[in-house]
Length: 173
Image (cartoon, rainbow, N blue to C red; front, side):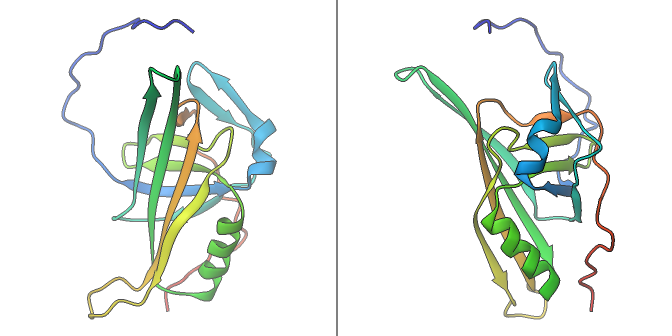
């Protein structure tokens, strides 16, 4: 891999927006062989089961570049903060499973981009809360923090996965 810059970048139009729309979880062990890398874009194999979680507001993906001249190393740490509104047993059970595993995650933003987090090493749940809130307008739900350390930033996905949930959780009372 060359170590020098190979292209410039124009100033884009002001048409982008922030925020995450959906996240898709897949067990790490079933997806490793189903990925192909082509110029920074990942193509997901249709045989991989992804489970869609709809989210809105208060969720974000941030990737930090960690580079050490002294050690000659560079790696990327992605942190996904997710909020699920409403408390329910079914979601809590899924969160327990996520906490014990190391899923690969596709994150969909409001610009139509999909990013694969944890491609080579999976993601780890590193924190979270189950919160009832104190006041009427407070969050009653779950928060999760998932972290992935990789040798490359999250790859763009060519096509977003389909939801393989036979009957998605409806936490609304």
